[in-house]
Image 1 (cartoon, rainbow, N blue to C red):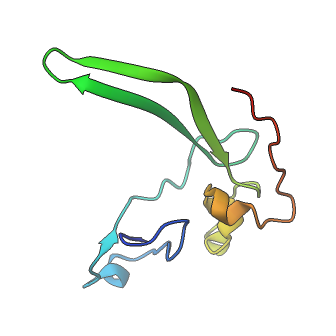
Image 2 (cartoon, rainbow, N blue to C red; image 1 turned 90 degrees about the horizontal axis):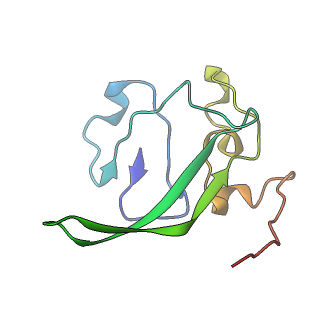
Amino acid sequence: MKPNHLSCAKGIKIVGKKDEIKNKHNFILQKYLSNPHLLRGFKYDLRIYILVTSIDPLVAYMYQDGLVRMATQPYSNNADTLKERFMHLTNYSVNKNAENFIKNDNQES
């Protein structure tokens, strides 16, 4: 559950029962994947940026660089770990506060 008016992982909650989300307004709901694809045991997400300049005919340009965000704690789908933000969220604003966070100083262009 994500508040639709916040950013940087503020207000994100993982809920287990449908009745826990009853009558909640101004939230975006997503299905949580309990068995995600992992990279060396860590959750990650990929962003590829595409500019669409025309629909008919379709004209799209893919930017050559993308973005990878990683969790900083190895993933476990154990129900006891659902509150472990460093394990389940890949947001930079969350993981930059983890003890084992490694800043990427390689700013290749």
